[in-house]
Length: 196
Image 1 (cartoon, rainbow, N blue to C red):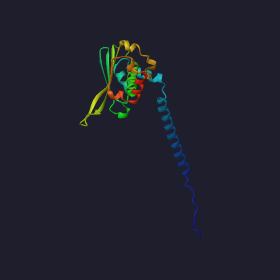
Image 2: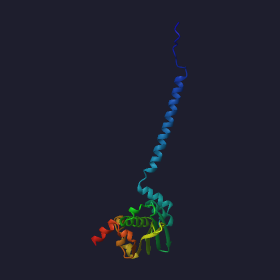
Image 3: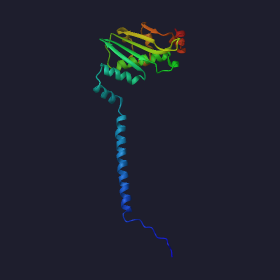
Image 4: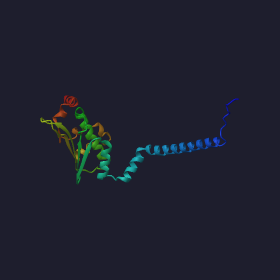
């Protein structure tokens, strides 16, 4: 006698399989629709993004300034305003000592000025920018040293070409600046000094 039996699918198996496939199609469709709807948010043009920001954060407000600075700075910063005078202090302690160069400080200050301009602060009497970095003193304690400061008055601000601020040298705009000697020993600063 042959003990093998023919295995037949249960009468409801095709119906169950169809229902499972239909459910998976619905879930897959919902996932695709969700992915495209969130992807649309990421594809806002710069003008649309700027319009949304302008609605939430009006120009020439401290909130807008902090937003613009946070967008360009990986560093910690602090802004203070007194009337039409503005001070921006940048803490560069998260940078490697080899990155503390004249060129990087110029780039950092240019980014700060660009953010100030984008935030709507156009009618200022003066802007003071400063940067600090912790250097080890002889006892091996890290102490924050001011590595650069620059003060730009109204006349200096009028000289700035805002379309090309990121390519310019902030220190060339005014004589009211101080640089730590460590910046003057960087290879870029030495090359710049030889060009003068």
